[in-house]
Structure formats: C-alpha cells, structure tokens
Length: 334
Ligand code: HEC
Ligand code: HEC
Image 1: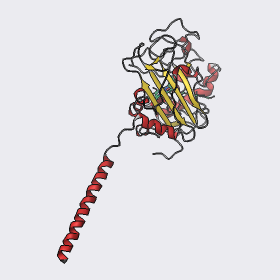
Image 2 (image 1 turned 135 degrees about the vertical axis):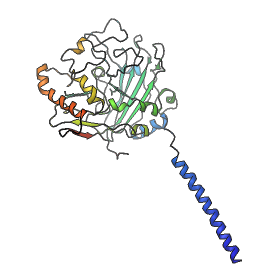
Image 3 (image 1 turned 120 degrees about the vertical axis):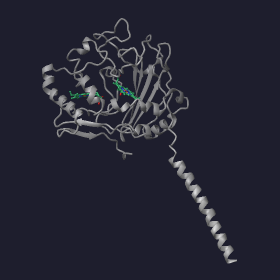
Image 4 (image 1 turned 90 degrees about the vertical axis):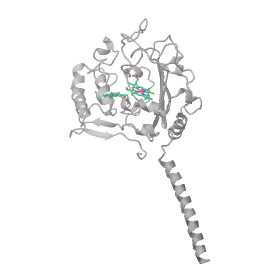
C-alpha cells in the first residue's frame, strides 16, 4: 500500500516536472525567437501614441521649392543643370536628374508646443509644371517634450521615370491600412540612415528648402530616435563645440554628416553638387549664418577660427579642447 502510494506520488511529480519543463521550453523558445519585424502600421501607431498622428495630406498643397538661375526662373530645365540653391541631398550614382529638379514641395503638417511634423515631396525627374507624381515622399514627426522622432519614407519604383511615380495628391496616413502599400516598411526606411544627415536636430536646413519657410525648428531641443528597434539601432549623434565657438550660438552642430560635409558646404569650402556661379560667389557661398550680409573679411574674422575648430574636433573628438555632448531625448535611453 505504502509503496504504491509512494510510486504514485513519484509518478505524479514526474508528470508535473515533465509538464513544467515542456512549458518552460515552450516559453523559452518563444522568447529566443526574434520578434517579428514591426510593420509600417504598428510603427505609425506607436509614433501616433508617443508623438502625434500623421494625417493624410496632399503634396500639391505644399509650397513649391523654387529652382532659380541668377535669381530668375530659367526658361526650361535640363537634367544635371546647375542652379542657385540646389538640394543638398544629392547622392552619386542615383538615377536622378540631379540637384536642380523643379516642382518638389515642402509642407509643415503641424508645428506647435506638442509636435512638429514636416513632409517633403521630392521630384527627382523633370516633369511638367504642377505634377501629381513624385519620386519620393518623406515625413519627420517629432515630439517637442520628449524628443522622440519618427521617420517615414515612400519611394517610387525603380527605374524612376517622368511618366510614373508616387501619386502625391492623397498621401495616405501611415496608420491606415492603405498606407501599407504606399509607405516603406520601417526596416527599409531605416536603411536610409536618416540620422547621419539629420544629426544636429531632427530637421535639416538648406538654402534650397529655406526658400519655402516650410521648416519647423527645434535647434536645442530633446532629440532621440527611440521608437522602433530598427531606428534605435542607429548611431546616436553628439553635438560638437569648442569654448566660445561662434557657430553654435543658434543651433548644435552634429558630429556625423553635418560636421564632415554640411558645414563645408555652408561656409564655401566645398560647393554643393549642382551649384551655379551665383551659388559659388560670396556671400551666397557662405550661407551661415542665414541672411549673411557681412563682408568676407568680417565673416572670416568672426567665424573662420570657429569653423576650423569644428573640423578639428570632427576629425579628432578626443582632443582636449573639444566639447562633445551626446544629443538625447527626455525619456530613459533604451
Ligand atoms: C544624405 C543626407 C540625408 C539623408 C541620409 C536623409 N536626408 Fe532628409 N534631408 C536632407 C537635406 C539636405 C534636406 C533639406 C532639403 C534639401 O536640401 O534637399 C532634407 C530634408 C528632409 C525633409 C524635409 C524637412 C527638413 O528637415 O528639411 C524630410 C521630411 C526628410 N529630409 C526626411 C528624411 C528621411 C525620412 C530620411 C531617411 C529615410 C532622410 N531624410 C535621410 C538630407 C538627408
Ligand atoms: C544667427 C544664428 C546662426 C549662426 C550664428 C549660425 N547658424 Fe547655422 N543655422 C542657423 C539656423 C536658423 C539654421 C536652421 C535651423 C536649424 O536647423 O536649427 C542653421 C542651420 C545650419 C546648418 C544646417 C544643418 C542642419 O542640421 O540643419 C549648418 C551646417 C549650419 N547651420 C552651420 C553653421 C556654421 C558652420 C556656423 C558658423 C559659421 C553657423 N551655422 C552659424 C542659424 C545660425
């Protein structure tokens, strides 16, 4: 009797242990399996919750970004032509018509104390006036309090051609189901490594987009790419400065593409791709600070040494005179 009781207990324990073990194995397996990649709908919903919703919009309601040559609208446009204020986005090897393609549009969708949302509808191919088709649509949405920032991108199918592209008159919200067809998956957008250029703050100034005044600014605000695993994996930018530096009074200077490249373009050390003679001439060649009306000699006196210090710290941030401050959001870093 006693023995069989004992046997029964052992049998029960064994069954229970087997059950617990298999349950543990089941949960463990679920945990080690990589989480399914977040799709655009889930990402957009998280962005809406943590920043603000991105509503449907119409690219044609945006401000046209002018292309001028000697401050005049040219009689026509040619692929790879030069202009006064080329887009600074040029990426060599892309099948585009260059940096002076007309009819791109910029539109601020929201700019208040809670959220800043801006879109650019880019033309990379020359089309007739007021085109409904675009080659790329990008949106940045930014929470002014926490600094959390989301990135949305849609791209026309390759090879780009004037007679096809993204239909820009009803850009769907990325939260809507029909947005799934229009917008890239977050993993695809993240491959564009937006932060490398957008490294000082979420928004990227250039003389090209500044013509529209459709650009929010948060120059010293919190800034973090802390939504979505693929964006959290991006390099985290820092601000570069030196003591008394005259270039960082109005905004930070990011340590990625801004200090390596954009600053050079801003102070006439290199000319941006697509620059015409007007763009290469002082003061147009020195577009920082904005609306620069100094003589070149005055400019050099105030800024040259500061610019050189930025370059030195960009190349060697460990040098003792460099002040390198990580750019962060207000929420705990994950
Ligand atoms: C190679 C540098 C570079 C990269 C990478 C980049 N951008 Fe930009 N972006 C720019 C520049 C420069 C501008 C300003 C307009 C211009 O000159 O074309 C800009 C402007 C924008 C704008 C208009 C608002 C603003 O900040 O001026 C949006 C929206 C935008 N980018 C989104 C994105 C997204 C989304 C990605 C990643 C998928 C991205 N960008 C990657 C350089 C870049
Ligand atoms: C009087 C204010 C002021 C000064 C001084 C100034 N800037 Fe700017 N700068 C701006 C504004 C405004 C913007 C666009 C708004 C923004 O991005 O916060 C800007 C944007 C930029 C950008 C575009 C990059 C980006 O992330 O948007 C670069 C590069 C830049 N400045 C470099 C410089 C350099 C180099 C100096 C010193 C020679 C300088 N700035 C001095 C006002 C200034």
